[in-house]
Image 1 (spheres, rainbow, N blue to C red):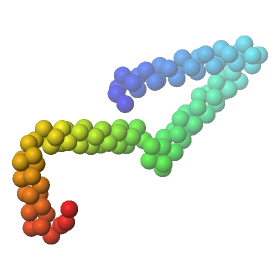
Image 2: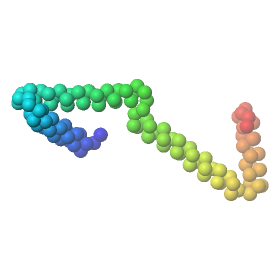
Image 3: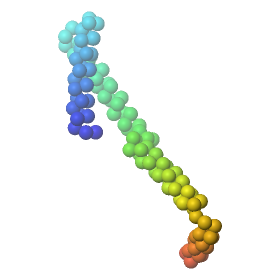
Image 4: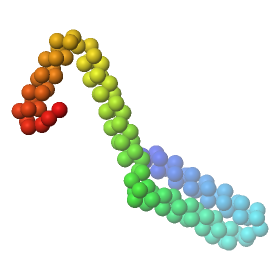
Length: 113
């Protein structure tokens, strides 16, 4: 969250508190009770909002983690596609040489295809 976002959030909460105060005054509450009711609503909303962060942390659905997962998935698709296109553009002789080289490397490392 940037500094500008923090300022915007603070202004939003300030305006929300003022609107809530006005609504509670119109609903018939006197000044101090309308202020307390308005504060209570804002505090309740903040607790719900913070709780949603805790929930996302526990379940692993934080925004950054989701972005990272999507990026890794998309990167894998793109690289697989590019490798396949490059392999398809090779001549049969080049493909055969590449496969032999990979088999040799795998045998040298003790792995199998």
